[in-house]
Amino acid sequence: LAKTTQPISMDSYEGQEVNITCSHNNIATNDYITWYQQFPSQGPRFIIQGYKTKVTNEVASLFIPADRKSSTLSLPRVSLSDTAVYYCLVGLSGNTGKLIFGQGTTLQVKP
Amino acid sequence: SAVISQKPSRDICQRGTSLTIQCQVDSQVTMMFWYRQQPGQSLTLIATANQGSEATYESGFVIDKFPISRPNLTFSTLTVSNMSPEDSSIYLCSAPRGGGTEAFFGQGTRLTVV
Image 1 (cartoon, each protein chain N blue to C red):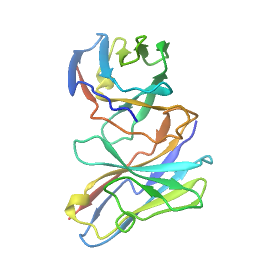
Image 2 (image 1 turned 90 degrees about the vertical axis):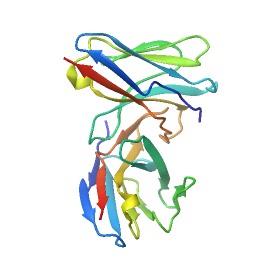
Image 3 (image 1 turned 60 degrees about the vertical axis):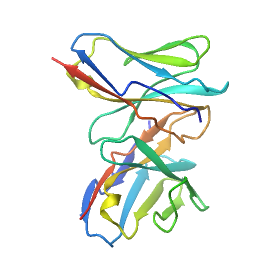
């Protein structure tokens, strides 16, 4: 499974757009990119997954350049409740859910 | 979408004792996974629990310390054996959701060993 590198922490203010970039230089052809969110005292929660270009859902957007060696999670207009740790993972489609977590990015949203 | 129930949610245990953590999924899944999250750290995969066969452990984790049961397709247990304060962590179970790298997680068991 490809290793990922993310910033350890980020600060933002309410209402701003937050972009968290993840590097995965050794991503394999069949790997998908997935982001999870973890609040204190809770298990991680799936946010979004993509393979290439752009994916958008009701929570976030995921931008993946053509070389797929990085990806950017975009959170529009964050609120205090978006304060959490965000994990970027890469892995095979159909890998049955075995996940290898990197260090994650702690996002602190300030009022 | 699947729901995972994990219990206990927390416990304080004496060193040298063992604790069994239960994980129940509301739908059948082929594999379940157990993770450890030490204070302030990321999640580390302990093992993959396969129904009908022995669990597959990651490097650094052994069956004698973390025995796992998987009696059916919706249930698994993880036992933390002969506990020491270093075992104080959050233990989480997960199950795959669809394909790719999607999974559901339980809410975790916060274990404190004194």
